[in-house]
Length: 142
Image (cartoon, rainbow, N blue to C red):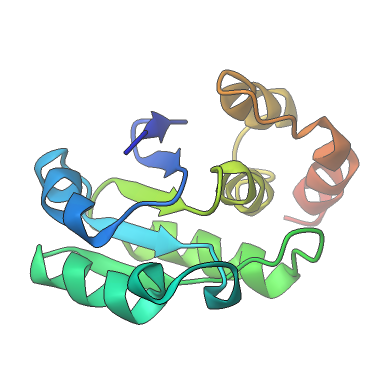
């Protein structure tokens, strides 16, 4: 498990496994968002298995599958809603953490400066610069 905190309340990670649930809870996370579609992974890592393990550890599980190259506004809105509804820190995961970083940055447009939304994920190698114009556009609408 490789948790990469972007802020005090939001972190991303590459794929986690059911056996990571207790450690995630012990690390203080209260909500886990799965941004990985089931079609990308083996049955033991799919949403149902992850939900069962994470909820058994006392965590809230949110399914928001993000298809690479096809991020929707519904994905962005669902990510933002999960953050608002969480009563503590959130861990979001996908294959590498990149999609979880992108939907977070887009959901935070207008709440944080665009440069910050790009710089925080960049510390972990996530290149969100191609999303600058979209973040700025969303910020202008908020």
